Image (cartoon, rainbow, N blue to C red; front, side, top):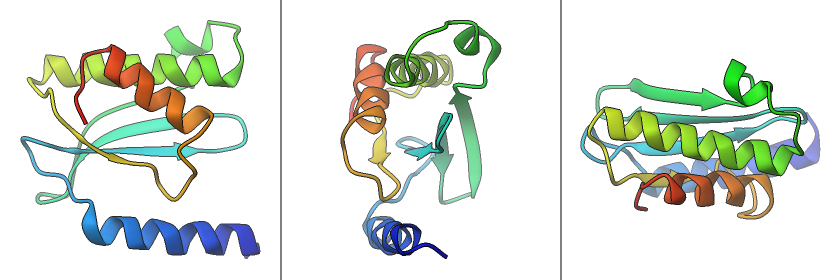
Length: 117
């Protein structure tokens, strides 16, 4: 594996030692690939994904915008799905990435959508 990937995995494991989601306060996990951004609401106690959103969703993919703007739309989408489930507080899991760029855009979009971290 690439040294960058191994470093991110180590950071990710350290974050996961302390950050855990419940049914009332799930973990908002963010994954960033070269082309897309994914977000999931995860209940770690039961090992269940409650909701998910990504830049591959049809309504988001239809927008021809830069990746940072699409990532903020992912945050807003996951926030509306969480509100539909009656969830308003989450624990943010940046997945080993720096809190910058697309990761920050997802967080800001989720906050705009009404989620509290």
